[in-house]
Image (tube, rainbow, N blue to C red; front, side):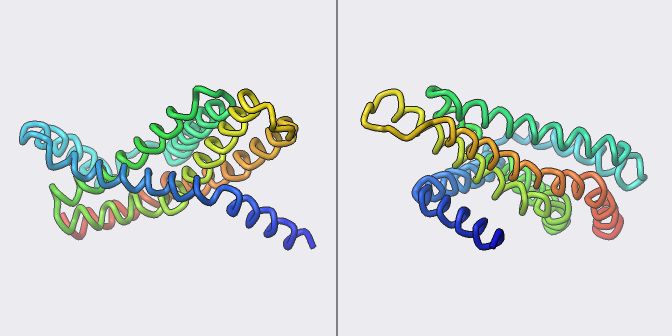
Length: 213
């Protein structure tokens, strides 16, 4: 019974916010494409400097000179949690709507730029590195960011309707509780993404570096 109740709640949430989900997903994809395009606009000097830093980092990974996994997990989880927390706070304010969309777009830009730069500079080796070090956790993070972004935009719009459209008689507090619980539930996925990034990615990166570079 609980399982079916949860499924119905999820389906209802998706149906109610379908147009927002489509918009945020497209916005995120545009950010990825834009990030990949930005790579080609870099000057040779900028590409050289970035590649030099990457080479130093990959050298450290190959020699096992990386940060402690538990420290990496803590830093990674804190970073993503702050990002989610900021989007949650912005969803509570009427003026936060455009900033939420900008944050989603920028997240897409970062993913697109990182993958695009690795492939542009390192060819197939860069593709394999991005496949083991960036894509796995982003299979969790990207849907999580889209869900949180959609929930934040949706709640922000409800706040706007409540403030400027007096016809809306829906109590805002129950909506706030649902919104906050959704953010917390999706936030739990951060632990899996951060765990993969801290404990598994370095090993996979070392393997790829040793056999492709």
